[in-house]
Amino acid sequence: MAKRTSLLSSVAAAAVLLAAAAGGALSADLGETAQASTNGTLAATAGCGKAPTLSSGTRTISSGGQNRSYILRIPDGYDRNHPYRLIFGFHWLNGSANNVASAGYYGLLPLSNNSTIFVAPQGIDNGWANTNGRDLTLFDDISRQIENDLCVDTSQRFALGWSYGGAMSYAVACARPNVVRAVTVISGANLSGCNGGTQPVAYFGIHGIYDSVLNISMGRSLRDTFVRNNGCTAQSPREPSRGSLTHITTTYSGCRDGYPVQWAAFDGDHTPSPVDGSSSPNDSRTWTSGEIWRFFSQFASTTPPTTAPPTSVPPTTPPVTTAPPTTPPVTTPPPGEPGACTATYRTVNTWPGGFQAEVTVANNGATTLNGWTVRLTLASGQAISSLWNGVNTGTSGSVSVRNADYNGTVGANGSTTFGFTATGNGATAPSGVSCTSP
Image (cartoon, rainbow, N blue to C red; front, top):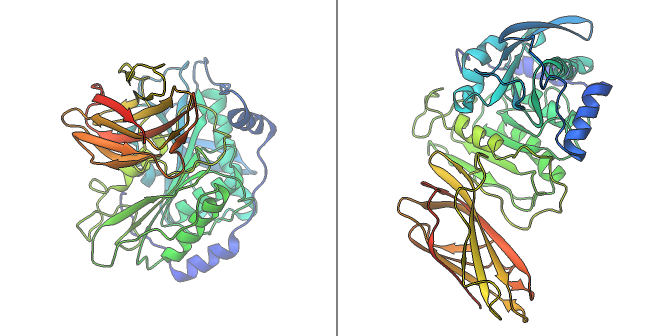
């Protein structure tokens, strides 16, 4: 990000820790919209279908009895009948809304392809002390102003930030779990408070292993709040060694369906733009923006799920949700054959350079299957990058996938599924899809 020269001093860090405070509740109209977005069908904001009065640029707003400001970025070719993703980008200490906007909202703007409304709020004294919940109130007021004027997808609200901005994003996740779908906290700590902090929110934490301003233990603590809230299996994720100049991203297992927790530790200090293979941060070369965009983009425009926790690891390279499947299902052998184990392949999502697929393993016979193995041949240029609900041998060409420990038994007329993400063109379905048991 542009000109991030002001890091938290130890004195400032102590001061903001003392200043962290609880926030007020959402007002009735925004609260009702949030409730609709989590407990019912997708709610259309009041701005949908209206000719907008807001435009891109710096906006002023009265919030908590003070004049506050934010920078708004509306997609080119804005369609008032199309619900858009909404992303808040919070600046760092002694940074500004202009810094965030000029650096492309942590590098997400160029990746968004005009699919997203971006907001960069301005903190008081260039920080986010959130005294008496004033910055949460600002978040609420900006959200309300935008959603009353623009068309927002109420199941696609996100927040992110670095350092003090990460602390504010964490505060939003704690206090507004029914409003934000996911947050990303880069090199953050509990500096802006955590009012509530007991409900699930999809969470991505990024932190340097030798952060000299906000120790990585602070970032781990924030992460673990949502490991618990999201029902994930507790673990100590691998982190890179000093001098490796790499990063390691871990997706937690066992999380409640639709509420993943992801953790990326990198060999570096207090920076939002680490670069693998280099000790010099660089906004244009950092891996963080791509991983954050993939994390946010995995969530479909639907209500957050309420199903039981999954029993396997979600994909570590989340897909960008796009068009419906472009390839027809491939089934072999023909369904209905007595005692047959069948495998049906379908493409779930595609995006430039990659795709997500799902295979349904069905038992069409009258007896229970005890173990199964699916074999398929990926098209040229395709390679599996992550797979869940199964154990694969091979990642390209001829690949076999056997059942995981928990889904090998398939009752008569029952089925189970496994999925994977892959690089390459997803328009071509694999050939030779077959299933055997055991």
